[in-house]
Image (spheres, rainbow, N blue to C red):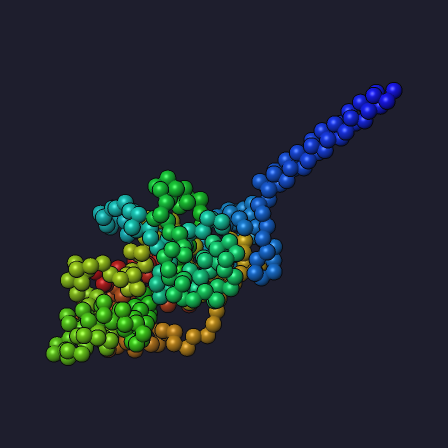
Length: 368
């Protein structure tokens, strides 16, 4: 009897071990499939539990097929802007024989966020520093929390963000088709004055003074002093404009991105942008993007008072000092005036076909 009892006890132990192993394996399988369906959660810096990846609906789906049946006024506004850009590009292609295929170099301003399926084309002097900060928070997987704690110099380090030109051709095409693409634009002459004030009137921008200031003064200023030619830190706005409209300038080298046109940086007639935000409605448009990305409940566009901001009045004052000859070359009384007028009509809430999107294209003709 004793050997038989021992055998029974041994078999019971084996059965329990087999049962425990099966149960453990079953639990592991359940956890595995849960992790596939629901990615690992992390605690975001604002105290809200969020997925490290996008939800079940992408920003593109939420934009074109929103969960709420009735479109919001913001959604209707952005649909109007998309239509205007499309109409303008179609009209522009009808009168132009120029056709080109985008190269990887054309895509270096398009920042990619894989987790939220976003592509942002940054335009210097259109709040791109704060938007780069936001993209670092979105793509940093917890490394960054408050966007305003990221130094501006760090936001402009190219290695901190991934751009579309770093992908293969099939990967580029997939993202252009599947991700929500957006950019922000600004009245072109206001942006030009902002670039001048930032790069040529601030003493700390010695690299721009040396790189461009000395060249501008040498080419545009008669009887320039040796100190001015050496430092390049007192460029006048009139000299800057003359440098831009000089045909020799672009034959010598491409425009710097701070005064390059939006059309040339982001290619709105080659890439279909799902959202086009404006500098005048920067906060509202930015937060709408974040809302569509599913992060609007805990992440907002950073705002702060900045008394040095370039305004409409300031822009008008700067251009009043431009000589009549340069005004003619810039076509301020023709194409540029229409461009300025068109922009202001949109700001006044009177959108009409092509008025908004003209601002993406019109300045291209004045500076080339």
